[in-house]
Image (cartoon, rainbow over all chains, first blue to last red; front, side, top):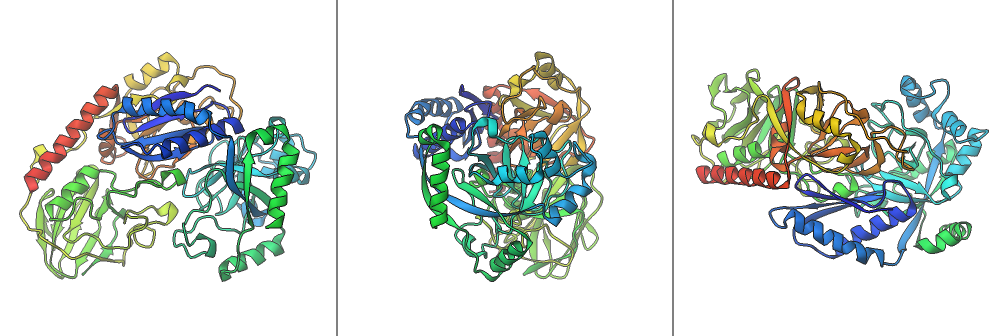
Amino acid sequence: MRTRYSYGGDEHVFVEIGDEMSLEAFFKSLSMSKVVRDANIDGVTEICPANASFQVRFDPDVIAPDAIMARVKELETQAEHADKRLDTRIIEIPVYYQDPWTHETLMRFRERHQDPSGSDLDYAARINGYDSVDGFIEAHHSTPWFVSMVGFVAGLPFLYQLVEREKQLQVPKYLSPRTDTPKLTVGYGGCFSCIYSVRGAGGYQMFGITPMPIYDPEQKISYLTDFMVFFRPGDIVKWKPVDRQEYDRIVAAVEAGTYSPRIAKVAFDLEEFNADMTGTNARLMEALNDA
Amino acid sequence: MTLKIINHGLSTSIQDLGRPGYFHLGIPISGAMDRFSLRAANLLVGNPEGAACLEVVFLGPKIEFTRDAIVAVTGADLPVKVDGEPRDGWASFQVKAGQVLSFDFLKSGARAYIAVSGGIDTKPALGSRSTYPIGALGGVNGRNVETGDELPVGTASNGKAGQQVAPALRRLPDNPARLRVLPGLYWHRLTEAAGHAFFDDEWKVAPEADRMGYRFRGGRALEFVDREPPFGAGADPSNIVDGCYSYGSIQVPGGSEPIVLHRDAVSGGGYFTLGAIISADMDFIGQLQPHMPVKFVKVDMAGALAARGERRTALQRLREALA
């Protein structure tokens, strides 16, 4: 992992913590973007953390590009000494895998897919060495995930699974992006899962759909009245498989304003996790189940 | 008072100077593609520079006024008419209650800005009236302007007819357009030859050019430095582990067609970027029509800052001329 600094035009400093994805890179990028934010540097207008990199937007009329670059580099050392511990929350997200809506959509765009003969899940299960789609789905929801980035479009979370690298699921994106993806599709591309916050174009494989809205520009949904975007980087997610009946029940509850997501406050310590993944995940699940 | 939209044209949206500060959540800045022209239109009618205007793409709308107002149209050369009588662009004029503003066919440029004294007064979202349709923010209930809409207009202060912006004070792209680029970001992914080819070749604006991004084609395909794909990046040599995108950054999926991200940019993704268009030249992109020839011109940071200074001076001269 070697940190690489560059400019994105005359208004952005770009910092790549590592060119490959890892929890270490994610933690350092989150921690460093936090240190830069806390430094309250005059002329910095926005900080965007990503999976293994982050970006600082600045106004060059207020702070010279080489001055902001030097400041951000200085702060790297501080971030390296920061605790690799995060006070965050774990959220249960219901997923209706193999739902009819993403299935209809994936059939419409079959000619853009690596394997037009089956579904996205058939393909993902096969190339990851699973005998059955059910086994693959279980691997997808059996351990928690980190929200490692929020973006692409409004409020869309990228998620990275809390398992050893050799157990990470990897699936390429569509050969050519679709022009349509149902709202709230649970997708997969590279080593990341995502939830499409809004309907639109997309290149990730489609596994299912969640009944729980995560973006509401009108801020009418009961748990989105404070802010229209649900996720923030550092959130932990546990997928919970649901059937059609449960899906419909949650959709109705959201509409009635009676749905509240299951959420628990947790602390996540990277070193503790690396020393004992099963134990750490079990402790996270315990906190969630108590909520 | 309201503006009655008799016909919305091709794609007309409400824009101001945008909503900075939410890109880290995937909500882009939005706002006028050509901010200089929007500022000029507002100054002409006596509005604050960042008041909400109509951004018109290629084909003008038809609008009936319910009250007298001062109006100005800037940006693209889209001939203006009031009740069928021509009016000058880049100048303020009066429209009386009951009169209809309409347009002839576009002569040059791509986007015109219609400012009305008082400014469009729709409900702001996250501090801006700019339209971001993907996220259903701003505009008319989160969408572009449509035939049949009645747009509220704020109370006018001190607009007067007969103001104008002399041609020398306008800021529009040359033909072929020169777009200055600061190499950076993932520039190192390109071979040296590809780096030269990118700047040597002439590109053309592709039909897929909108507020999210402008696509270009016609130059040679770019070649990448060989590598072992990093974990999580994807197998294609143009892939990276999904990261943030800068406004103006240039991605080249598969190495074939550069895409410049603009005001409604996606905030991140899995394609390498070779650098970014400098801030001073972003407005020019908003005035490019499909098929227009474009040269990308390499600059260093000093060049980017000098260009930024020139744009600031141009804006200052505009303000003084209309003060």
